[in-house]
Image (cartoon, rainbow, N blue to C red; front, side, top):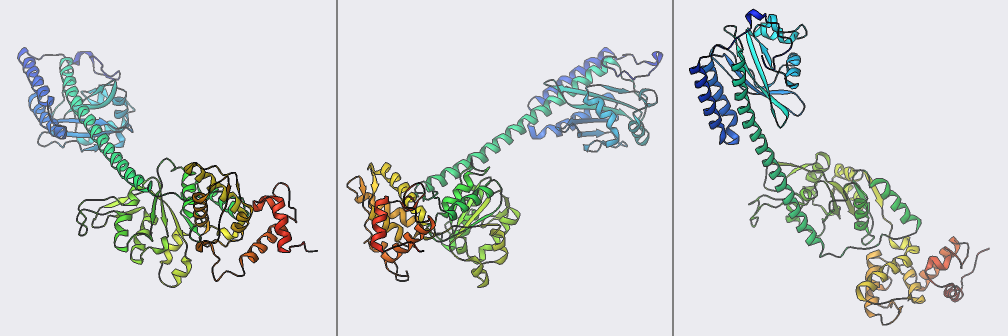
Length: 533
């Protein structure tokens, strides 16, 4: 018997011989040709149905009691896809084969044909589970033929006899092998079709995501990004150290600080240092969106969700799937939407406005606020549970007046930026201008400083940048203690004391203040400053 299993113990005198008549063989050949034609153009979603029809034809034509078709999975388990049996015989249950048939499955996986005419003689001692299966089901004879597609074993077709013992002649096995190959090619075509559909669906998802990201980036490109990721003050260096610690995690970050301190820049820095950096960070200003639109902007909407919703729209959380979403001014989020944000933080899921389908996302949240959220919680304007969810890793961003030693470095950063865009070469900042910048309280922080430098660059006509502080926006506020000169005097005195009154040299007072040593000495004399004994 070709490919017969080595453990076949049938006696030579009882070995089956082919006694099929010429008419029977021709009839089988015609049936096989008809089967091949049936499967040539069968739609992918009709393959299993067509296999069941053919199984019924085979049972009637060949006199078997059960025909079963099974497929190997990626984990090497075998799953029954289709089984048909005559009346009085149970079909093989669909799904994975019982675990006790592991010997049988291992032989098929190795590509061995299994021909059992009588289990007493044909099953080896180690096939304990298989012998019990024969006894329990009343099966007399069984034939399983594995088949290959592209050199890989992908499944098997099996024929069983329950009412009497059946021999398995060589010519019958050869023809049944052809039947199994017809089944296998049909299923293989279906699997390739399914892979193609899956790939097309994934491409559509990626295409839709790319279109959403492109639309978002096109909109974001119209907004000039803020600057300010430079500094050498101890407080700002501590912030950068915190960013370095949290960036590589997926933890939620809450940035706290006044308007204009550079919270968005810091959020971008966290994203750029994270494993999500290959996708754009999605930004949402909760204070800039009308309360009626913020839900659809964050979570998306279905067509017809409200008047004017003419098409489905993905929300910012969907766009941020696999990336980072920055919620600026999160304290302005309406109270009625806060539970929905809490659910995203806890479960990573939500529904679009006007929809019922749950959408799962993996978006890291970085939030920012210039208001004390703890106070808002006490006043009932912000949910306490949401506050604790956001407050996993809080970072306090210092105002510019508390990091004055960074003002010269920031000023020159902005000067270089505008020099490139405006085509103006600036060699120095006037000493009196730098002194005034150092003395000003900067209620608008880094953003205000940038605007001041930009205005001065527009008006500049030479290599020395002159910054006029007479502009109303630069005048000290009424609640600022003392005059501009007093503020300048206090700041210079603090820097001098921090440097031990060392004026010249690396990291000395003149360098920290961004002025020439001679200019600083002149200011010290004019302001009447002296070293305390």
